[in-house]
Image (cartoon, rainbow, N blue to C red):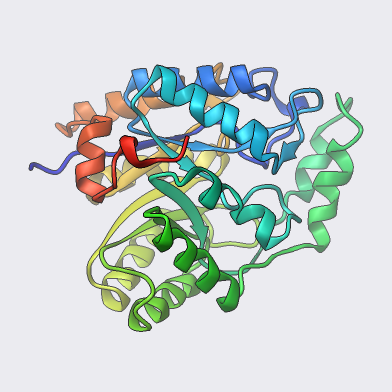
Length: 307
């Protein structure tokens, strides 16, 4: 099959707070709608977090996650990638619980520990909608997003058990060595799927030179792999456009960037998908359907999920 582009839409995440954008989806209905619209716009994968519908705060509630992913499945054949990042500060068990519960085709697997700092964003919120927002953002100034080798092995083996492909989230170049270690140990299976996440304060800066370096290093350390790139904020579209020229896949959506262009808030993740699809098609790159993306990533299929 001719190489086709996999577009992932990360629709809400656990980084942005409701005060940052009125369009950030927080209720299950809003998250489902945003995911379905993103698929209709051209996304073959949606990356899903759950939020408390009353406060918009990220939550590990399996009940809410189940309602969201089953609601998406009823309306779309899009690939659902369930987060195991959850909310900063959750325990490993809380973060991974959705995998045995829902047995998704794809789940995020953070490839190493990182200082995941959101504190500067607190100064930009003059009148927070909810009292949790400022303390949540400021608290990241003294937080390590921990993903130890023991934890990684637990994540990967659990995903293997349920036929879920790990999407390795790589925030810095050293995490590639972590993945290579688990391949050598026989736990991670090639070809692995890597999401390079760039521009997080504490991780690798979002530059085209650094993206090229990440891809080069992964080729040297791993060899056979598939990859995508996500970039925070205003770096999103320059980096995903570079990835198109390098043969990679891309992630867009409101989790990573609240704007569709400078000073203009995106009303949905579908707006991001529309934009990147148009760029890709202008370059002569065809966009993968969910069925084609399943074939590219060798996923188990929608009929084998647990939701």
